Length: 310
Image 1: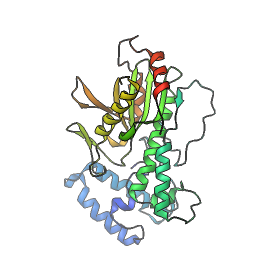
Image 2 (image 1 turned 60 degrees about the vertical axis):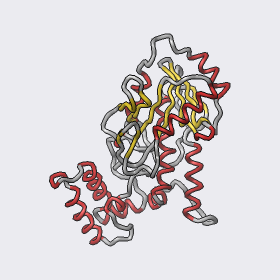
Image 3 (image 1 turned 60 degrees about the horizontal axis):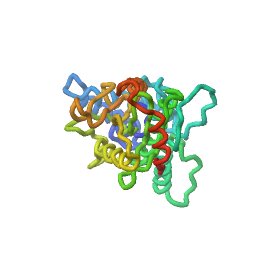
Image 4 (image 1 turned 90 degrees about the vertical axis):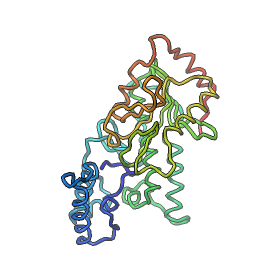
């Protein structure tokens, strides 16, 4: 379990309501432990998730801290709202960077559209007209339905990717929240001397796998097809810009997959790549074309003239 708001809450993992008494909580934990223990044929990942949940709410003191909105223990995985070093930075929009290091050229507002949708959904869930002192209060977000939590997790994922790309330096240019017309949006377009990438940043709050050319997992919405959506959006942008992408990347939390990079489609002509967030810098720094074949200046000028933001 990471600090992602898309993750199942400890109560959801244990299968009890937040109002359950301590004895009901203990019974639910013992029952789930018997069902999920690897020695009894259970899934190791599900058992680990259960242990993390119990650590967060298994004692009265820990439960009070969790219910009050305190962040969970530090995790070695990269949380949706964190950095590549795993440091959690909260649910609110990131503060402007104040250091003077050379950074990538950046256009658009990463996570902006996702935050707008989240705030609207949160307002509807709380109740129109009811005051919300802090929409990013951890206790409020953790009490929200999974669909609302998923929306803020998507914004945090996009912002984390934006931060990683920005640190690649001034040789890189990135466009965020690019309008793909009826096909939605591209979270990021990244241009470097190594290639031009269409990137989707996403967090389902659970494990996923590649199967038959698509990403599947128990926490995806019914009918959700992330690879298909990325392909359609990237092709829509290509039609407008008349520039082909070197490749497509789906950036996911480290806890979602085991491998740093997974190929979707045929190895010789991949449809896309699934990339763990901590491996993104290495992927973008690896030449995907022969040196000198990426005309960065011409592509940048063309994109600047044709890209539209949502």
